Image (cartoon, rainbow over all chains, first blue to last red; front, side):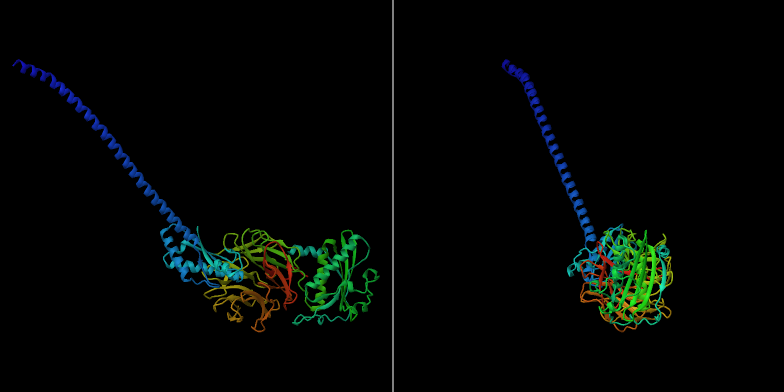
Length: 185
Length: 440
């Protein structure tokens, strides 16, 4: 009986100690859990940031690519000349393809006004070429207005044979010089 | 321009001291300028005799006689005989009056010009005579007095006398030539005297400037310039600072003054199509002269101003047409070739000079205004363009690439004696010969 009492006493003393220990242990565990959570949160946040950065990168790239495309389209508008046959202001099939692209660009860029420069090769006489250059620019303008571009956005100017791209005196050079060139005002 | 000639008249006192008797002024049987196969008249021009010795007189007698030779040779009428072949040393001849004509006929000279030079301070007195050596007759003699620096004017005046006595026309010795030169790096208008002497720049547009055109009184010059960024027409009084600009939408090009009127024809494209309009000298549109879809341009007037030749593409290729202004009737002039442009109506009114393209090259042609008698004047020597007549109709100035870069050349109206007029830095193009200036 006495022994039982002693055990009980010991139990009373020890158990709370255990309890204490347990509680202590539990506390430690709890502290561990909160640390893990923090790390997880940080990782998530990092991932989120990374994802954001990635998305931002994609967006930036998209914008850049768009800008590049836009610049390429503008360059094409500016650099792709329309060519003609000797003593002719008639638009060839190739010229019409190029002009359709130009019309599209002008439609996508409604604020732009442009100048069409009509040029000739050196073989004709220069007064006549001033008139022919004018006819070439007017041909291109009429084609574009027929595609719905407002005529008020397009100015024609003739340089006749005064501004050759290629100053050589051969068919290759002449073919390059019989052209309409576009500039943005 | 006017001022210049008034000055000339003040400086040079002309004393017409002898005109040989029996000269039939209406005859002009020496040079028939209507004959297509000219024979050059052999002419002897010994060095002028200096009345008193001295360095200035020595130099001037040589330069003035050389200048007279060159100026007469320029006309294409004469064969200047080599002085080395002369049998007479004019320095030893005591009197200019008693020339021994046999000494000249025996070397083949049909004409003889003698001269005497007297220097007093900065003044020169020149006595010049033209003889017919076979008829042993004085044809014309003149005494001129002026400043030494005016010797060129004196020589030219006597050349004019010589040509008048031989052809019945005073020639072109007081005319000038306007042209385009790229000497400055840009195309600008320049003017030189008829023989290429004294070229000077008259525009400073720093842009493309083209197509100079003289008014028939020689006081106005019209031209096209990109000075404001596009081809506009400028009408400019040469000695007074006034003028007008025609700056309509599109091209404003190819001016041609109406003879004896303060009006001009020019090509304007404000309607959308290049058409020829009649304009006042102040640049206002009077009326439209062509009405045809497609290119119409490059007007040139008949000397009476009643008809206008121009270029039109109405038949599919650029060809020359003539419009009668009063009746409005238009007829096609050129049928040969597929590219005929740059018409220039002759001062006598019977022909039109133009540039025609064949085998990819431009050459100068003449055609009668009845469409008959087409003649090609230049052959196989590069591109030959922009013909313009001397005021007497004896010579044609044009541009050619025969020696590489485009230069200004002169030939007779028969295509003979083709020579370069002048060489400046850069290309020279689009010459336009002025009318006779002043009252000479």
